[in-house]
Length: 307
Image (tube, rainbow, N blue to C red; front, side, top):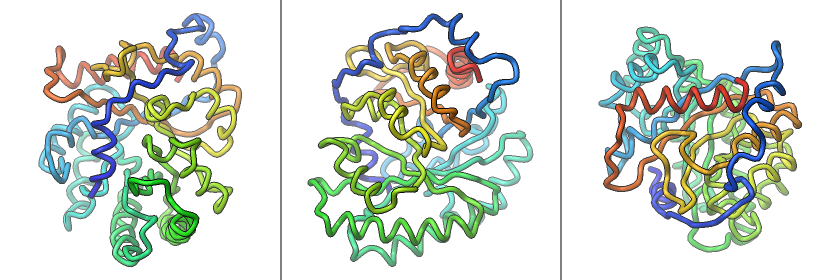
């Protein structure tokens, strides 16, 4: 389950960042920076906006036909599902069939657990093995790991335990052709990035899959993060927000300085994949159908990032 993650998602922080100052670089400059023949990242969609309608387990398994149909119509390059979807015994058969029907590949999955708690390691490793094996059978390539919010600053022993389990899951991922990457919420990057730096100190070469918006909400400038750790970034989540911290309906409505982020990615020669993750505030009524929100988001990402 993703209880710590959900709690984090609902915490509307008001942190400011240099990436919330509006676009510092004109769109024309960004487009010219990505000349013909430059790297074009594939853009997937994370399914949280659908899963959020299914508390408390956040399992949108019953909505998968609609999800694949929406993403196909919107032109997304793939879908990032959640671990709960892969716990269904028929997940490989059903999701594989939908992927083929709508020509939307399953490109990865997100996964969260209390990895700092050594008493839960066997349970988590057994579960992760099932999830990763099925993801590999669906030809998914990335697993975005959230290590769990301890609700306190993790001790050195807890960080040791967290790293030990991550190494074991990394081996499972390697065996299935999946790349594990650390996916952050706010708790990993708060307190001077105590949690994330604790993991990096123990596993220096671990891959990263930052959520750019959670970086902002955790008080970390995404541009600085990319300039520092960009050589390890293989994936990222893209989401937008207004100046007051409220999430937008689609990417491009808010104040996030994606042009500066795009230039930072270019400067570190980013060659990974990106995932648009839409998230609506509680009781929010969208103006547009979901397909339109995906299309508008994707068009903005293509234009601004040059992908």
